[in-house]
Amino acid sequence: MKALFSLLPVSLLTAFLAFGKASAQAPVHALTLQEAIEIAKHQSADALNAKQLFRSSFWSYRTFRATYLPGLSIDGTIPEISNNYLKYTYPDGSVSYVRQQNTTYTANASLNQKIGFTGGNIYLKSSLQRLDNHTDSTVTSYLSTPIMIGYNQPLFQYNSYRWDKKLEPLKYDQAKKRYLEDIEQLSMTTTSYFFGLLQAQIDYKIATTNLKNYDTLYHIAKGRYQLGKIAENDLLQLELNFLKAQAAVDNANLAVDNALFKIKSYLRIKDTTGMVLIPPADISFFKIDPLNAVHQANMNTSTSLDFQRRLLEAARDVNRARMEGRFDANLNAVFGLTQSAPNVQEAYVKPLDQQQVGLQFTVPIVDWGVARGKIKMAQSQEEIVKNSVEQELIDFQRNIYLKVIQFNMQERQLMIAAKSDTVASKSYDVTKGRYLIGKINSILDLNNAQIETDNAQKNYYNALQTYWQSFYELRKLTLFDFRKNELLQFNIKDIKL
Image (cartoon, rainbow, N blue to C red; front, side, top):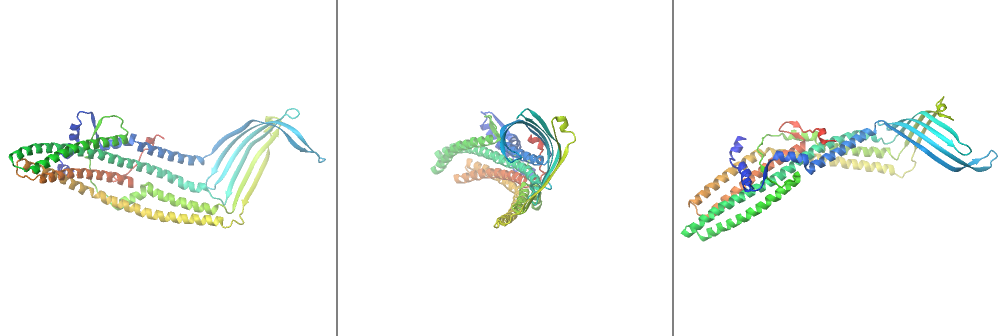
C-alpha cells in the first residue's frame, strides 16, 4: 500500500483540492465512498424498496405459519325472523299450507386446527339456539350442543401442506438472501454514481489545468514568434489548443453538474450545496480462491436457493397432477352431545349423544386421457426445469470463477495505472520545461505529452472504480466478505417490521 500511494504523491489530493478551489465561491461538503454508501443504505429509493420487498416476504411467511395454528372463532344470528307458509300433510293424505312465524337466535363457538401432515382438519364446536314460535302463541324452545368434535380427512388427495412446508421456509430464506444482495447492488450502484462524479471532477481539474498551461504557452509563443524563433503554424496550433481548452472547461463544468444531480438524486440529498468527492484510499489487496468463491455462492446466495425452489415446485406440480382428477375419497367423523328444552337450564341437562360418520368417494370411469395428459405435461415441464437449472448453475459458477480472476488482477492493474500516471505526469513536466526554455520547438511533442498525462490519470481512476465495483460485485455474488472472511448478515430488527 505504501508503494502504491508513493507512486501518486499528488493525484489523490489534487482530485479533491483542485475542484474545491474552483468551487470556493459556493458552499460544498466532502464525501467519501463509504459515506455515500451509508447514505444510500438509509434513504435511497433502492434501499427503501428492498426493505418493503423483504417485509412482504416476511409477512407472507408469517401468514403461512399462522394458517396451521389453532383458530378460534365465534359466529351467530341475532335474530333471524321468518314469516312464511309451510306445506303440511295430514294423516289422511290431504295437504294444506300453514303459516309459520319464527324468530331464531344462534350462537356458535368453534376451535379449528389443520393437521398439515395428513391434510386433515379437526374442530371443536359448541352452540346454542333459541327458537320463538309466534304462530299461535309464543312458544320458546332451546337446542344446545355443549360439545361437538369433528374430523375431516381427505384420502388419496394432493396435500398442499406437505409441499408448502418445504417451499415456504425456502422462499423466506431466499428473501433474506435477496435483501442482502439488494444492499450489495445498492453499493455497486452508489459506486458507479460516485466515480461518475469523481471522474467528472477529475476531468474538470484536467480541463482547468490544461487551460492555464495553454494560456501560459500561448503568451510565451507569441513572444517567440515575434522574435522569429517559432513558425506561425506552431503559434496557430497553440492558439487552437487554447480555444479548445476553454471549450473543454465549459463542457467539463456541465458534466460535473449533471453527475452531481445524478448522485444527489440517487442518494435523495435535497440540499443545494456542492459536493467534493474524496477518492477511496482504504484499499486492501487480497487474493480469493475461485473454488472457495464458487462454494460460498452455492451455499449462501438466493440464486442457489432459487434453483432448489424451482426444482421443488416442478416436483410438486407432478405430484398434484398425479393426485388430482383420479380416485378421491373424503372421511368425515362427528361426535357430539345435544339436548332440547323449553329453557336454557334444562337444555344442558342430560344431553343426548350424536354421531355421524361418512365416507365420500369419487372414481372417474372415463376421462378420455385428461388425467394422464396432465401428468405427462407436468413431467415434461419438470424435465425442462431440470435442464434449465443445470445449465444456469454451470453459467452461474463459471461467471463467479471469472469474476474472481478479474478481481485478483486488480492489484497489478492499479499498480500499473498508478505508475503510468506518475511517469506520464513527470514526462509532461519535463517536456513542458524543455519547451519553455527552448530546448524543443515541436508543439506536437508537447501535445502528445499532455494527452498521455490526461489519459494516464483517467485510467488510474478507471482502475480504482473497477476495483471497487469488482469488490462489491463479488460480495453480492457470494454473500461473503473475503476481506474479513465472514458471511454477510443483517439484523432483522433494523428492517422495522
